Each structure stands twice: as structure tokens, then as C-alpha cells.
Length: 296
Image (tube, rainbow, N blue to C red; front, side):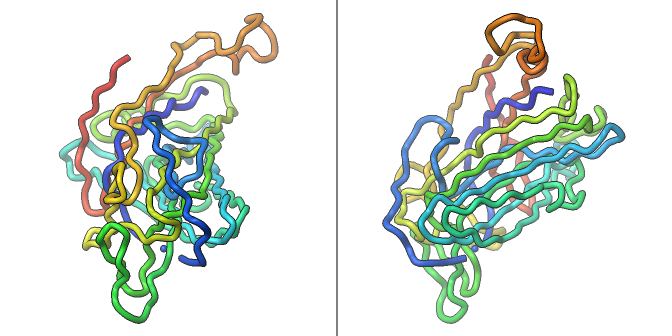
């Protein structure tokens, strides 16, 4: 099976929660007009997990998170499940689950998504976001954030900490969603193509912040933590580009040079290309559809 070519499109608001420690020198954001997957960030997006279980087997996804900084930090890991149902049916509800971990300097942690979720996602698919976090002291007034918001005493909030790397590995073992299972009025996922077991990996998308390291970010609201994305310090994080590009290959296209026969024939041939359009503007209390333009 050939997994999905990644095109996450626009990053608007997201969600909640946070931990601590003394700041190193500020790490300035790297401004780019492309998606960044090889630089450290304050906010990581793992655009797909697949933990579908079927008669053929169980697919697995593992994510890796590395703290490249010189001090420890807390991280929030949130799993967002793909919702089932049709548009307008009232069933497009994204279940989400969050965990918090301390991660010391130069440490890498590995999480098995299926183990963490225990079958909680109805389609077995979704995406993961990770951010560095800090706790507002439990005593005293709410903590002000760098962009004019507040965090309640004792609550956790995201911080600027451009030192996180991430990657994900997908282990395809033959499981797939039924063709008739709908997500947003279309099939939840395309049918798998090719031999299994198969493995594919990619880096997480890294989103940086322009604020000094360990600055509290976001604004705590009744629907969760609201985060903003733009090019100046008026925003919490650096915005992803409005338009992104990716390459693709048609099924049967050669992916490696050389003879077309031999032990590497299957992995050297394009079996399937799928594009992910990932709407990260979600809420636990309702989700609006987004219109996208795709040109090939």
C-alpha cells in the first residue's frame, strides 16, 4: 500500500491545555512559505493515524516526539478522531482525547496511537497535534498570554518553545474501513492498494512561534483554548501558507531508476496516491465544513 500524500490546508483556531521550567535564550521562528517538516516547532501536526482493526489484521501508528532543547518541558498530546456521518446530519462530531507528558532535554518518546486510544475512534483514523505547555500558578490572578489572552490559575496553556521535532510511522496490516462507512457524506477512506504488511513514515509538520521561549500563548474561552496564526507577534504561531503544493505519481509509475524487475519492484512502483485535506479548525462542540480548491 502507498499511503497518503500530505496536503494539510490552512490552520485557524484549535483547542486546550499545559507544564513548566526555566527559559533558555529565545528561539526565533523561521518564516517560510512552505510546510515545514524538518525544523523544530512549538506546535506539531501529525496529519494521519490509522489504527483500523479488521479481519485481515490491525493497522498501527506510532508517533515520535523529540525535545531538542537544553531544558525539560511539558507537552500536550491531543488525538482528534475522524467523525462518521453525512454533512448536515448532526453526526459530524470530532471526539478528542488528550494526554500530558514531561519530556527532558534531548529525549525522544514513542507513543503507539492504538494503545493510547483503546479503540475509542469510530473510524480508526484521525490526526494528532502536540504542543509545548506551561502551567499557570494555582494561586493568584489569571496568567496573561503574549497575545492578550489569559490562562486560569492552575490551568495549562501552550507556550512558545521552538524545539520540538516529530515523525510518524504507519504500519499497514490489511485492515480497511468498509466502503459504505461515510465521513462527511463520502467514504471515510479509500480502499487500500498493494501488498501488506507495509510501512511508511514521514515527519510531522512543525509550526513555530515568533514569541520568546516559554511565553504563554492562546486565550482560554468557554469552548476551549483558542489559538491564532499569522506572520507577526500579534498572533500565537506562524501561519501555514494559504496555498501549498505537493507532488504525486499515477498508479503504476516507477519511483526508482533502474530495471523494472527485481526484489524492489513493489516498493519501487506507485500503487496509490491519496491527498489529505486536513481541517484543523475544530471544536469539541461542533465542526463546520470548509470548502477547498484542488488543482492537478
